[in-house]
Length: 227
Length: 253
Image 1: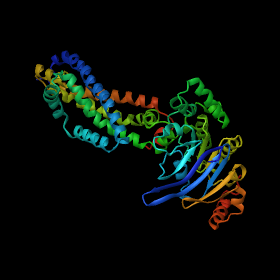
Image 2 (image 1 turned 135 degrees about the horizontal axis):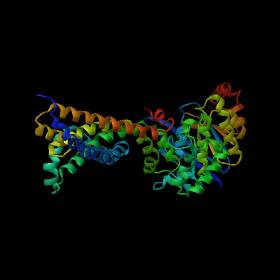
Image 3 (image 1 turned 90 degrees about the vertical axis):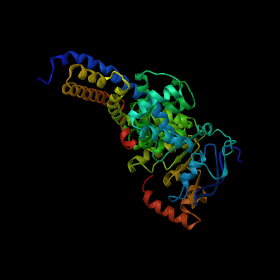
Image 4 (image 1 turned 180 degrees about the vertical axis):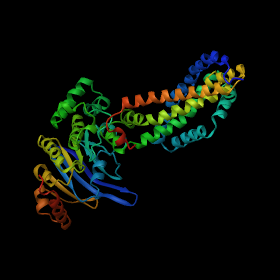
């Protein structure tokens, strides 16, 4: 019995199309996580005690609960029962990935913010900026640049985590591969193929972020930023 | 309060926990004057400067900027700080901004000036500290220490402050770069920019300061015309200090 059924070749485009879903999950989660992570990081770095504690609880929750549990909890619990809405599997997955990634990203951004020497904030305040102005115009433009390598790593992690969303039926790369395995009756080549696709997506995205990182770099920033 | 006093400090106290850093400091500066504060490390000189623009909150005592008491509760400190220039020992230029933007950002974001007006003022300030156009589009990391500090002075100057506070502005510089910064500071002082300078550079004090205040143990223990304080001090501590820094800095002007 041959390992590769000639049939598999016909399914390749079907699996490749999963990239659309895989990237929707990854970039959706990454983007939402960014919108959540940056304010959390700012709150943790500059907020009062109560704010910090609340944010700690958020981070602690989303970092502590397995992704698959979060997916089930939100898809069958939180959205329908608490908020009374039935969201699609894709949308639920993006939101859950984003909420969770926000917790992780906040720690990347917080580290970057804290690596910026105190003098930057002092100088900003000394020319009359409010704390908020200083954060927006001085701290974040530096911190976000410093955070790109950590953020690239988050992309790589999120990309692979997105595969778990097959459990809700999202037609991403892994789920499609599973269907092909069922249809063709052979498992080895399809899964190897899926694995290779994930490697390529990881490599390609990482490369892209590295280019962006180089593009927005400023002489001396990383060195003085303490990384 | 003296009629033209730009800054008046009255009985300033500051402690960090049990450590009393300022134990009642009072002085005033009139428009156009330059005063120098000297003294050994750790006697509260930097704390004093930071209290004046309220980067550090004093525990007790009052501060007036022109005729406004800035230590009064409810005062908008951001408005006050726009009018007090501050030059740090470590320059603290904004790393992610080019030279011109370092000087412009306070004008556009804080003073809300239109871009062209901000640019015109930044240009003027940079030229006043001899930062020429070839350096305007470089990042801070591409400048020498002396250039960085001059840009930092321009950043303060561009805001059109009523006074500039200098916190040991030459202490982080390589010796051969100190001169260019002092030169700029002297010129500004002679042009009538009111200045309060914490420094060990006796030459600067002797040449341009209207008064030299010697700080020790959280207080100003001696003050007067620089020549008198340096060459004819009343206190033993003052005498020892200036003998020591004289040996270190004496050969340099």
